[in-house]
Image (cartoon, rainbow over all chains, first blue to last red; front, side, top):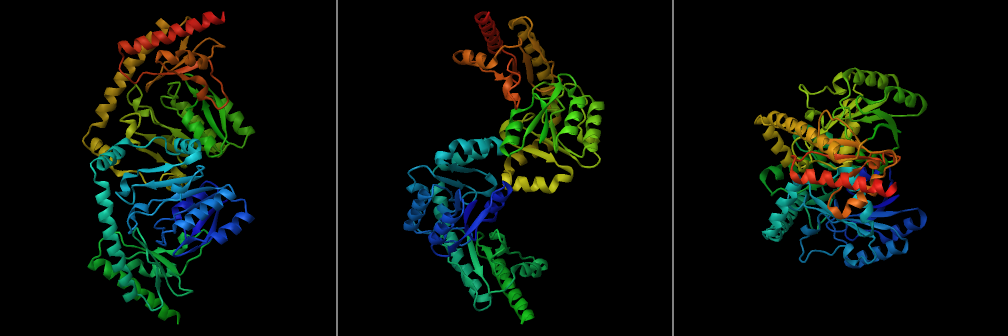
Amino acid sequence: LVAVDSPSFFGAMQTLKGVGMKALEIPTDPLTGISLEALELALEQWPIKVIQLTPNCNNPLGYVMPEARKRALLTLAQRFDVAIIEDDVYGDLAYNYPRPRTIKSFDEDGRVLLCSSFSKTLAPGLRIGWVAPGRYLEQVLHMKYIGTGSSAPQPQLAIADFIEGGHYEPHVRRMRTQYQRSRDQMIDWVMRYFPEGTRASRPQGGFMLWVELAEGFDTLRLNRALLDKGVQIAVGSIFSASGKYRNCMRMNFAAKPSREIENAVRIVGETIALLNAQTD
Amino acid sequence: LVAVDSPSFFGAMQTLKGVGMKALEIPTDPLTGISLEALELALEQWPIKVIQLTPNCNNPLGYVMPEARKRALLTLAQRFDVAIIEDDVYGDLAYNYPRPRTIKSFDEDGRVLLCSSFSKTLAPGLRIGWVAPGRYLEQVLHMKYIGTGSSAPQPQLAIADFIEGGHYEPHVRRMRTQYQRSRDQMIDWVMRYFPEGTRASRPQGGFMLWVELAEGFDTLRLNRALLDKGVQIAVGSIFSASGKYRNCMRMNFAAKPSREIENAVRIVGETIALLNAQTD
C-alpha cells in the first residue's frame, strides 16, 4: 500500500498498479500539498509502506510544499517507519530563487528516495534520470538491473558535456523566467475564455496548470467534443486512482505563448460553454 | 511458472524472479536445445504459462536448435496453450548463412514473443532492442510504459541511419567470420591449457563458449583463486535458478584473439590444475 498525493501523476500510479501495489489517495491542499492530518490518519489505519509525492512544483497542481511541512512529513514518516519516494523532476524549474529544498535534504536516516531527471529541464528524449535511494540502494540497483539493465552512455555523456560547459544553470534560469511568463499568460487566457466560476491553480514552477470547472462538469465529454477541433486536454480523472476530478483538467504551457495557443484555449472555453448550454 | 532452457541466461532468470515468477529449468541438449520430452512432461504436470528460451546461438551453450525441433516446440506450445518468449539476440551472429529461422517465423496464432536487440550485433551501449509480441501487444506496451516509458530517440536514429546506409549486413557478415575464427582459436587454447577431460561446447554462432570441468570441480573456488591474477570467469551456477553447473564456466571470445587472451586462458588452466592438485 502506497500513499500518494492527490491528484497525482498518472504514470507513477500506473507503475504502482503494474507492480501489484495499491495507491491510497491522500487529500492534498492546492497551495501547501499533501494533508499531514489525513496522512497521519491513514498511517494509523492502514499498512502503508511508502509515501510517494511531488512536493516541488507539484504535477499537476503546481504548488511548492512549505519547508515546515516537508520537515513535518519526514517526522511522520520516521514515526511510522515508512519510506518516502520524492519526485523532484520539476524542482529546478521553481520560479523563486534559490530553488526549494527537497525533503531528502532533511533526511537523516536514508528513508527518502529522491528521484529526478533531465526530462523536464533539458529534453524528454534524453531519457536520463537518477535516484538517490538512501538506505534502499541495493534494492534500487536490483530493480534497475532487472528492469532496464544499463542505460545508454551517449545521452549521459552529452548531458555531462553540457553541464561541464556551464550551460545547465543559465538554461534552467532562462526556462524558469519563460515558464513564469507563460503561466501568467495562460491563466489570463483561461480567465478570459473559460466560463465564469472556473478556477485555476497558480503554479510556483514548471509548466502545468490545473483547472477546475463547475461541479458535475465532465471533461471526458469535453475531450470527445474537442476531438475534431484538433485540441486535446489532459482530463482530471487520469490523475486519480479512483476516478476523481472529472470536472478538472490539466493544461500545459511549456510552449511559448502564441496566437495558435490562445486560439486553442478559446476553442476549449467555447466548447465548455456549449456543453454547459446543452446541459441546462 | 515459466519453463526455461537450462543452463539459461541469468539476466532473464533474475527478471523472472524480480517480477515474482518462478523459473522451471528444463534439461537441454548441448547440440539440439531444450528437451521436448522433458518439456512435455513439465507441461503436463505444472501450470506453466510461458516457455522462455534462446534457440539460436544459445547463451551460454551456443547451439542452434534444428528447425524440426523448433516446429515441434511450437506445436507443443499450441497444444498446452502457452506463450513462447524467444530470445533471438544472437540470431544474426550464426556462422552459417542464411541465418537460422526463428520459432516466430512458424508462428500462426501469435503466441510467440520474439525479442531481440542491437546490443550483441552493433553496440551494447545503444540499449536498443525490440519485441514482436504477437497477440500480447497490449500487455507488452503497458509493461514498456510502466517499466521504462519511452526510449531515447538519438540511438534509434543513429541505428536507422546505419541500416539505411546499408552497413548492417556487411557488419554482421564480418563479425560472424571473426567470431567463428575466434571460437576455433579459443577452443584450441582451452584444449591446450586446460586439464585433460575438459569439455567445451562448439558454438554455432555468437561469442560464448561453455566449458565443463571434471564432476565436482568448483568454479566459484576457481574464481576466488583467480581474483588476484586479474582474470575473471563467468561461473556456471549463475546460469541456473537452482545452483547447478558448479563445475562449468562460460568464456567470452568477442575480443580478437591476442597474446593477452591466450595468456589469460593459460592462467585459468594452470589455476584449475593447481586446485585439482590441492584436492587430490
